[in-house]
Each structure stands twice: as C-alpha cells, then as structure tokens.
Length: 214
Image 1 (cartoon, one colour):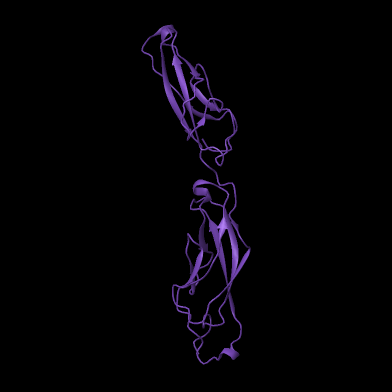
Image 2 (tube, one colour):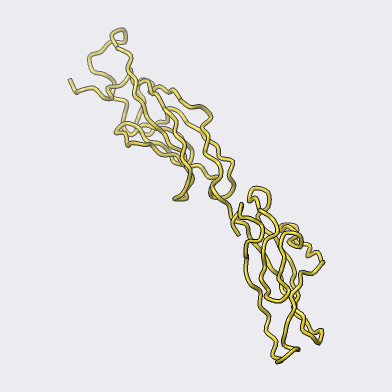
C-alpha cells in the first residue's frame, strides 16, 4: 500500500476455500488478537480491518513510509462447524516523493588552480533529501553539458574533463579575472523525482577555457 492513502483503502481480498457446501462452507474472517513477535514489522492488528464475510482487508490509518515500512497480522477463517485456518499477512508500505532535494547552499564558488589536470576535482556540491528509500537517494547532473567540467553523479564532485591549459603568453599580472557558471541539478533515480538546482561559479582565470586559441 502506498503511503498517504486515506483510511479504508483496499489492500487485498483474503480468500480461504472450504470444500463443504451450504452453511458449513460459509466462512467468517477475523483478525486475531495475537502478537506475532517480528521486531522488524509493525503490529497490523490496529492498522487494518478485515470484512468478516468478504475477506476484504482495508487500512484503518493513513501510513507514513518514513515512520513505518511494514506491518504483519494474523487472520483466521472459521466455518460454521468451528473448523478454522489461519494466514499470516505482511503489508509493505511504499514511499512517495514528498520532499524536494535541498542544496546546502543555493550557490557554490570554486577555482581551477594553475596546472590542474584532467580528472582533478575542483570542488563538491551537496544536497540532502528527507525522503527515505529510493526517493531519498540524491544524484547530481549538469543541466547543460560542459566541454570543460563534469560531475560525479553520486558524490557531487565537479572535476575537469580536460587539462587546465594555461593561457599562452599571459603573465600573472596581466590576467583578467574570468568566471564560468554551471547549473547543477539534484534528483532521485526515479523518473517522477522532484528536482532542485544550484548555481556553481568557477574561477577559470588560470586557464584558457572559453578563449579563442590565439
């Protein structure tokens, strides 16, 4: 069952089979007042209700995946002759993407140092997501590809795709400060993920990035 659905949502229909015909083949379903002792699962006795005649199992609560991910309960089917069978029911709660990723800062500033080589990291962006499960995994991408920079999708580390290529014939005192901007996006691996963006400004004064080869 997905989180945030209203109470009364149908989870499944339980059905026991009795070979008797007539009154002795009619079954009544009930949730047993018996703890099952699995510490990894919540007690489903108060969370679900079963229709005594149809076997429909419905929720009695609205579930929050971040608080409880699984429930277990025991259901008994009894015929008119008091013969019975029991079944263990496990209900898994699935999460929804409720929260936006949040960057630790709306903008980041990095510098390409002199002599930096291809593959060298120049800085790292970081975002968090309060969702749990797959919705809470954060992956990073560049909104637009760059010929000079790339990002590690799992760590958020921004690294060089090429050597820094120092400007030919330019002395240290003559270099004009130059910057490049990137937009980094954070999202989960799921196709319906929420997305957040942050601006990254990179000082490329000590490179020939973006300059015509003169």
